[in-house]
Image 1: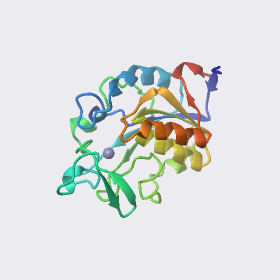
Image 2: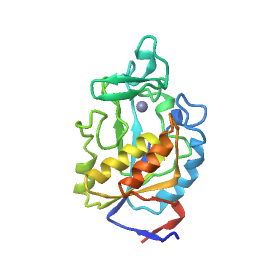
Image 3: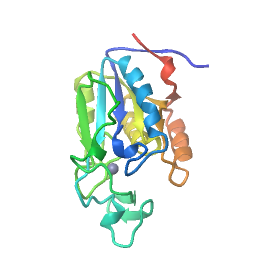
Image 4: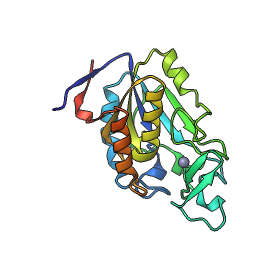
Length: 214
Ligand SMILES: [Zn+2]
């Protein structure tokens, strides 16, 4: 049974990485990633408060397979901060691939958090880089604005949405993942692992149609 959620002034929607490179035709395409754009637009229309995140890498970024001789995309390496999946070059700063999908239409979004800017550390989460200690500052922004509940949508479900959701919970916010406004990339069963992890943390996956403006 799905219950309706009325969202108001203490609720914020975080739209994760709806960028050209994560959509079909992009450098690191999430299958059917573009299908979420109309869903996210409609969803965002119900929120007074919206934050966007944007993956934003310098050339030679540590997460790119091309940076590591002999390595191929989707292999995993040991980084100083833990295991790191290697990706095709993507979301290079000031390129078309890093731009938001051109049909994404959320003019009232108040903040864009750029992440993955440090060449040596990847950043899946909107809150912390993958070293798990360097904050992006988003927690401070959300607290200062008085938000208590965080809703997440975007790409990819099993990486940047997952880690953002888990960090939001750790930071003490109520967290909901709007599952039909996300798509996964699914590296080595990462979608299944994500569902299990979110479930274990008590983070509900909900449908966009259950959210109504208050
Ligand atoms: Zn990236």
